[in-house]
Every structure is written in structure tokens, then in C-alpha cells.
Image (cartoon, rainbow, N blue to C red; front, side, top):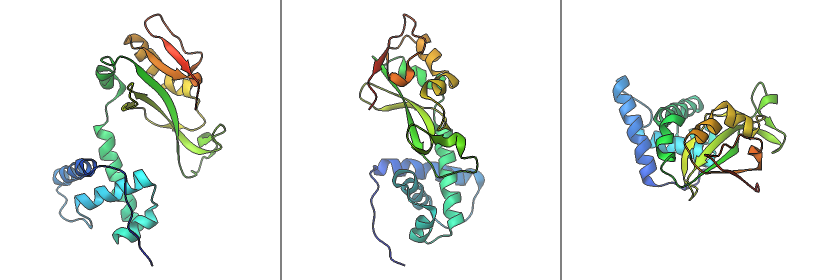
Length: 196
């Protein structure tokens, strides 16, 4: 089998942050031995999340089993998810913004057993719908839990309570035409931008 060097367009700060979370988690669980040290596990997880490397390729590159690669990635994802703010907590930062940008994105996934609900007719592939709130510079402020890819952006925003929360926060919000029909009280101006 051949191997090759690859890069991940992330900072070492990101790697160190995840490695520290993994290290703390192992201490809490009193885990005595693991195949990879926390820094290598963090690198493995980031390679999967950022570059989309398959578990088979990761297992070969890190000289571990495919099941171990899967387990290490899932553990890292769970640790990152526990660190994420919920919408109510994120609203503290959002209220301080001059304006917010609301948009939905389809994150591609492999096919799953119940394929129909995850298939996006608009994008013509399987995925999950994630709603994102960003600041005026496009920096991520909050991301929603994933819904099946067939869910429309406006429905997803209503499901997560995003429209009502932004309306109550008196934040000017920019959104594309996927959100037409959303209630726009006088406190919030939802401006419809052309979708790209």
C-alpha cells in the first residue's frame, strides 16, 4: 500500500484545542491506554471532518483498524458537540452584532438506510440541512443541529425557533429567498438576498 502526505487547512490552535478536550475526556474516564495519543486522535478526526478522508484511508494512514478510526472520530465529534452553544446562549453574542446573516447549507452525507428524507431535490444528492447564523464578516456565530436534507430552509428555521428568536432579539437579519414567507415584525428586517 502506498501513502502520501496531505495537509489540512486548519491552524495548530484548532488541533491543540481538540487534543486538549480529548486529553481531559480520557482523564475523566480514567482511560489507561489508547492506540493513538490525544494529538494524533485529534489530527485523525480533523482529517475526516475537514478533508472528508474515509475511515479506511484514515485507518491505513494512522495504522489502526477501521473500527478504531470510526470510534475515534465519533468520540471527537461528541466532545466538540458538547462544547457548542445552544441558540439561547448564542443570542448573547448575536444581540451585540450590527446585523446577522441567516442561511441554510446542505452538508453532503453518504447514503443511509432511510434515504428518501435525506435526499435534497434542489442539490440532487443526499445531505443534512444545517442552519447557520454568521456575523457581517461571515464568521460563524451559531450552527443548528442537522435535519434531513429534504427539509426546506424556512421549515428548518421554524423548527429550531430561529425566526422567533431573532425577531425577539431586535437584530437586523439578512437572508436569501429561501426564507420568504417568514414573519418579519417591525423589530427585525429580514432582507431577501439573491441566492448563490
